[in-house]
Length: 131
Image: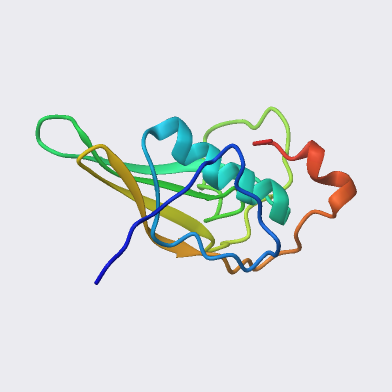
């Protein structure tokens, strides 16, 4: 028997960094982003939007958010002159979340919480980019 856990995202608090968001349900894209961004802020990392998949009638089917350090920077064309060199901030982190949308419910169907980098300390979390 499967039960969906519906949460109030305004009052949802996390006691530890190993919380499992799998199976949680929200009702729109803004709530989905807020759920994962609030978790990320409390945990000590920043997020960014990743993949979005649609049904044929342009209705959202899946939406993914990932750690801002996911993947690696794309190689730019060697012909382009760089205006300035930037620090490499991506580490190939695999942390992320996937929401599957069915009947107006955005359910967490995939949740990876392992990071391959140091997380922000409590006193620096207010400066996270997605905060």
